[in-house]
Image 1 (cartoon, rainbow, N blue to C red):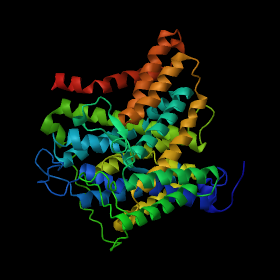
Image 2: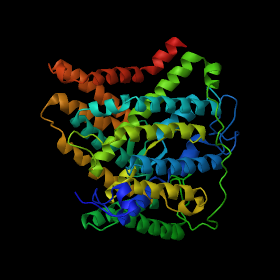
Image 3: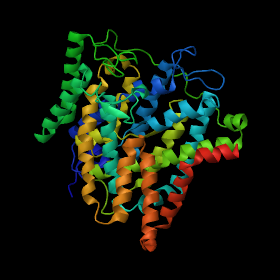
Image 4: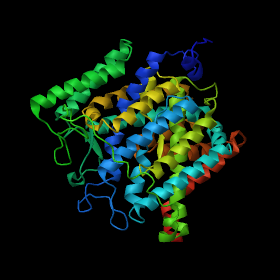
Length: 484
């Protein structure tokens, strides 16, 4: 085992993990670029420009979260939690507002309570997650997952992030219900790549694929930069403009234009605007408790599955697929929900896009520190990083997805009690847009098939517990309707 010199190298074990400082810095930058869209997307999911907007996300009292304030706290919490996770856990897994939880807050929870009360439920969720991690329960569950299921989780995450990239770039689009077809999605617009942004995305995929094949150092970062330049040239020549829901051929989220202003002071007034127990009074203890249960289960396994996949991809796991010192990492990750709720940015969790930085060489928490610093800078430099369109970053997700799907080589598909749970885990993640759903289906199927095939003694007791919890999770709405 190589031993490095210097405080930075010794603390982060850079040489020991076969990396270098420059590779960690580059990986941290790639991860930031791949996930910086969250500072644009999270405000669009949680926030609104005005309560009078037709699409405004209002709470039970008709209040909104202002877009600019949500953007500021999104960058703040992502920066702080990524740095803390890197320093304490020493893994290159960056944190930001989780897409599943923020959508749940905007669509399901906020209409029943006020925004501060909704964020209070997120804080409670985080406290429970941290307690479960501190007691060792979360680590025990993590280690109880069979190696084949861990490989399926990693492969499923690869399929999931590739699907995210395809959808974000407009390569795959939802077919409107008015089309009268049972097919939910299709290629581009009317079956063809009919927009300049999607064409730029295709160029980016091919470019990054070539760079990876040629083993060019920093290939993903170089590819993102070149694709962004190409996107800016295309926008200057064609004036495509943003999509904004009315222009399907426009750029999704960010338009690649050189900004007139590159800096500004962030508005952090949402920090601390949280009500811990108001929801229990407003909608009742049972209803609020069921909402917390949903948040906990989604948070618990989303992060666990993501860390499993990222750890395997980075080569940081042992022969059983377990991450060393994972308990420490799970505690810090759980704290992301507490901090995110307290700042009204929603629960922060490990981001699957960290795989982009890992694919570019990141192996330690130093990469996370770099990503975190860039997020903190993004609070002040929003216009500058917004010129990188999602169509330029999404190709990296496709390439990384192709790398991660290779984990299927560790799954024995000749045993059907292994094959079906693994297959469903891989399939359900992208099709339901949820890592937790894929893990849940995989757990339940694994337990049922192994019990039915006479291998009940091979099942860890925690597998039964988790399968039962996921069964309750999948039927939580009917339970809520009965009890409330």
